[in-house]
Image 1: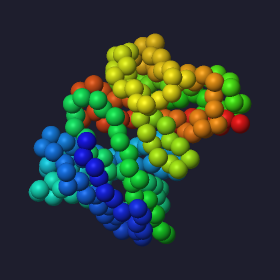
Image 2: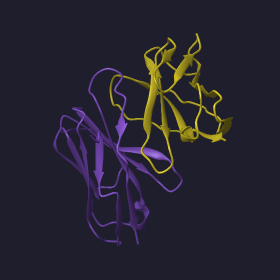
Image 3: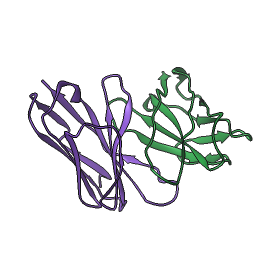
Length: 111
Length: 113
């Protein structure tokens, strides 16, 4: 599975859009980009995933660059409850399905 | 209507004891996992079962033995507990097809004294 690079921390004002970047320059053609988050003391929570097209669900939007070497998770109207560590993970859908978590980005939403 | 549940939520025990953590999912998934999150907050896969068969077994001491009585349950038994086993253990599940996003339980905080 390709390695990912994320900034260790970010801040965002409540009500504003939070844009979390992720670099995955060694991603291969059949690997997906997944985002999970972990709110303090809770289990990780699946947010969204994508292959090459931009994706949107009720939680967030995922923008993947055309060359697929980077992506951005967008929380359109961040709330205090979005304060968490966000993990970007690249993985194929075949074979062993373990998630390899890096250090993630600690996102703090400020009032 | 809990999706992935774990018991107990907290477990405090002494070195040398044997303990078990139970996990159940009601999502109809056929793949289940155990992850360990240590004091530095790194999350690492330990085991994965698909249809009651072990498919992932990372470098984990033999003192850890997973058991899957059926597709909805994956238990973790730990023998001869050591101080270094203190961590939060998370169970997760996913379907066996498609993107296979994983759904995690609330975690079991194990403290070995």
